[in-house]
Length: 221
Image (cartoon, rainbow, N blue to C red; front, top):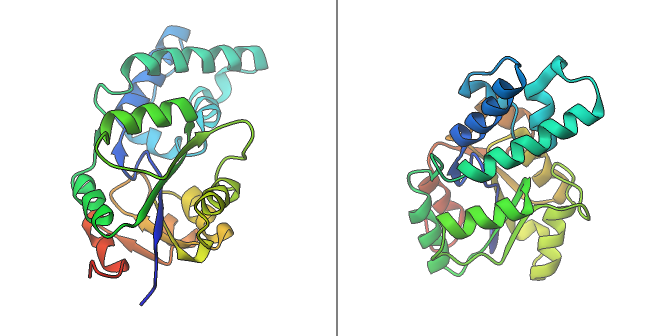
């Protein structure tokens, strides 16, 4: 039996379904700039590596100057600030999963490539009654996932060895982060990416629903 005492969650695509608000925000910016928009489903392959990467992928070849990219990035952040909670919701089963983990004193953490202030705002809005030891989004001082620095920072802060962490995420970025940090990578199939991508990126196992995670923890089999 694996003895996990802590968990790191990705946020978007793992705990919350935020794709429509992200897509609507970016498409509004693209429309205002006179650029082609994208189907919501397409954004599942644009998100996950931070806001700049999202904007770069969405504008594709339409923006050539760095100043224009910065302008697009600014406009996206402004737009997302007005609609980040319009359609976003926790995935079915997530509140119950968090309740069960808390009941066994599993140390819960969140590591996202979403901007840090949006990460903390989102968690406080959608999970107000759950206790997380660390909630971290993208900050200039720590490299974004898949660099393991953020995950290892959390492990050090909690004084728990990385091998005692399970890492749950929905993308190749998350699985590569977990592998690099020496944590146990589990892929969430309800998120934004495919089973194939998760397994090829290092997932030790994949699960189809949040509550399927419980048997990984002693006392919750």
